[in-house]
Image 1 (tube, one colour):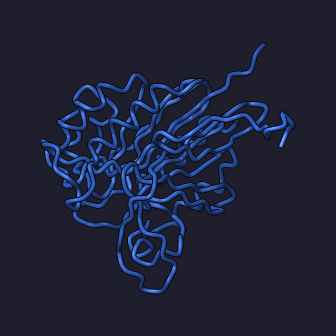
Image 2 (cartoon, helix red, strand yellow):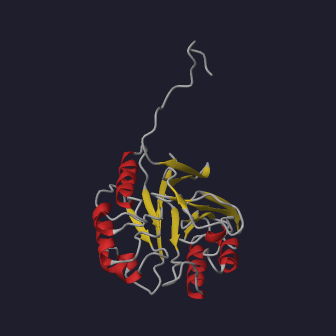
Image 3 (tube, rainbow, N blue to C red):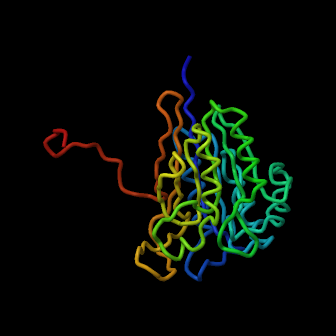
Length: 276
């Protein structure tokens, strides 16, 4: 029997604004989302699922979510949404009433299974705060869900990174209780990745016996500055997304994929026809 390859695309930090407004008067986040959707639709092989790991819109306004919903109608792949610190839970629920997984509970946690791969989303948003937190009820829920099928590989997802990245102003607004999350994840070796957003950069760190990965921003990136007390700046570096490739025999690999048009592909031959 052929083993099933599963591809999960992760996009994050869309920061959609209403009526085509630019974020920070410079960034066309709506156009960036459309370009990302076109890229995802054209991928071969196509992803089985897309997860959007928070900061879906910029201010949590209902009209921003309507713009997001209209744009996502262009996405030809199944997807699920997660909130970040820029989101408003109630406005998100009201804009997506057909997304049943968003309609229960105070925090927007959910579980789904794609080809034998468990996806578990934790809502780490705290109203009116930039930093994140997962409460005791959420941790119990996560532990219970992971205990249900201990042999099935899992991705645990939340918006806020549970690790220090070295960018000072972002580290001040990471997950506030990473040790509590780590205690749960460490008990479940089937967790292949802990996925997050928020950093607007691709960063990896060892966490609780597994690998934690943050996705790049979909339109703009946090400036790379590891100096102490570095300023909160952004740069227009290329946008991208993460593609998580799971194969039952080969395991999990994560690819950083650029969005945009670039020259190539070219074969690896020099002018004499020899392999370079």
